[in-house]
Length: 177
Image 1: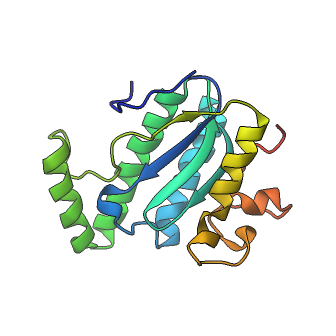
Image 2 (image 1 turned 135 degrees about the vertical axis):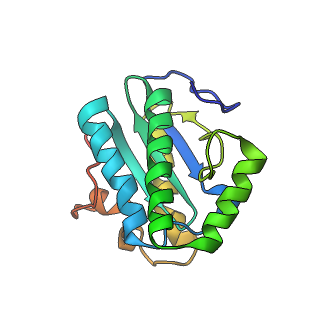
Image 3 (image 1 turned 60 degrees about the vertical axis):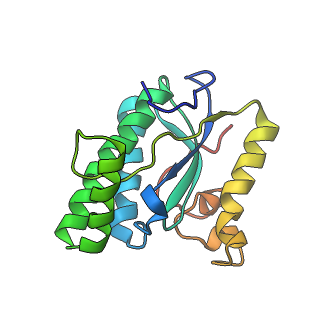
């Protein structure tokens, strides 16, 4: 079960989720780090029944709308597995400045690992119908536009806006709702 003070309304229905890197560190600036997220979602889609309706990955956080038979447990595994793989990638690439911050954050958070990558919790918000789902997807897809990174949502490489624009995305999303 999640340690978050936020709760999943109904564990088997779609939720809007936000995951943030500790101290808003820019970890997702390299394709290899983002690919770990995509690989994890693909595995969970095939083996855990994850339905990913939409997502956006920015340099230090991500937003997603997802559903699974037991979403709290699926999302906990997503964060745990991706954290281990990303920390391994950072070690491999000798990203000492970032690793130092992640070690420091771990000391402030908990003592069962050497680094803390994700902030605790995912701030789950249950999706209460198609109108809310559309609103959350629009918010997610426009995040890079609002930041001035791109002019059109589908131009952001690490977003499901590409899938919804009829272009091939980098990870499969569930658009048949």
